[in-house]
Length: 296
Image (cartoon, rainbow, N blue to C red; front, top):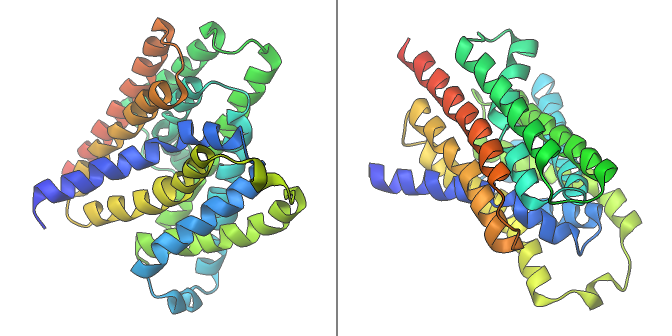
């Protein structure tokens, strides 16, 4: 595969991942959280399934099985549920900027649980991420309900922690299993986890009031943001070194912000740029720290 094709896979994979936050707001405005979550992971599983041998799930035993289950419950069910409930209470732009702090939060949790080296770049990135989120919440006038917005910020922050858990638990499996296998099987476990809650929330008349645009949002939320995004990203990652792949992580917060304005029609505010710039600077520092590690 040529470098150009690999770069395109990485770029559009991150665009797909970045679209998850604004699209989740469209989805949660129409569908109950657990119904939407169950459908999302089911569609993602079906998209990923052709790229794996499902029988290989039997090779997950002992610690590996516990890690895979943790990824499915925490990284898939927890992340999706917290993000959807959080997006009920914050604007798409605010949610996108908060989600952009994922690399910094992941680095912090990696230090806490795995004693990874924490350099000045990572300290600064974490500080910038937290400051950017606080600035967005304190000065953003996009939502009028103070308590509701703070509650939304907390839930989206919990989604970040779950996403970090997905990444960190996946590190324990990545030496023996392909990332696309981990994504596929964890989606399957996530669907099982969502199913009883989805049945509980299901209303027989729910889909009679759903428009074509709502169906499109739901389908993209599963097929695009989780299924196609994973396929594109992992195909690109196979062809480049770690530092190059890390650099493309910067595409995700940019796409999330741009798509929030485009898809949700939210009004531009300069405070968005300040908050985003601080969080994005943190992303760049994390990428640079990763590149330094690759060079050592």
